[in-house]
Length: 87
Image (cartoon, rainbow, N blue to C red; front, side, top):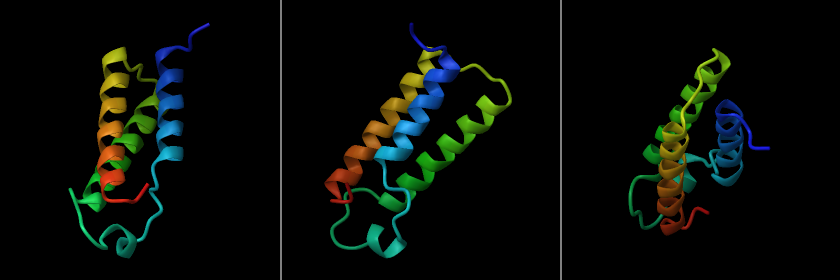
């Protein structure tokens, strides 16, 4: 059985938090050659995840488009972090 959209969003948020290194220090983020500001990307994604967690906590039900957009954003940020050799 497929999860409901709130459950799917919660699972996606947990997966993103596991896959992306939010705990890196500023020195680790800003060392060497950068292809996109990793610090700003991580801050943006963290805010998106916090926003969705808050909205889920207040009973909001995301649609499949919301889940897809968050996944696409996280994939692009992961790709940028990979280019910057942070993952």
